[in-house]
Amino acid sequence: MQNASVDSQVWWRNGYVWMVLGGPAVVVVAAIATAIIAIRSPDPVIDANYYNNGLNINKTLDADRRKQMLPAEQARNHAATLTQSPP
Image 1 (cartoon, helix red, strand yellow):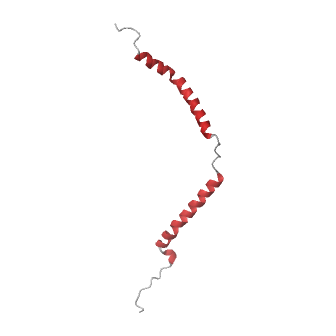
Image 2: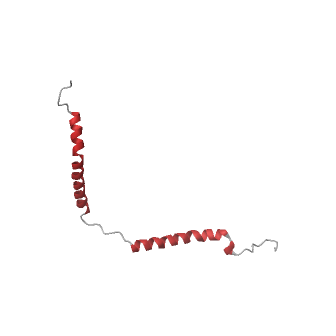
Image 3: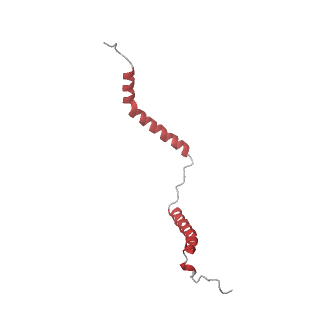
């Protein structure tokens, strides 16, 4: 029964061991890095009245956009209406 060959290679020289142990090790390092980032720079607290603030911002932007578009709308309307009869 001593004819069976025994692999005398030590475990740390086998590549499959490092592949099996390396995957979870990378995940643990990534989780620690993510936790450090989350602790150092937390997200700001959202204002309780965020929806109305957003509506007010949109109203201001719409008013500014209308002021900028006014010359283009006047030109479009002027080109679309015929004020004089063609020659």
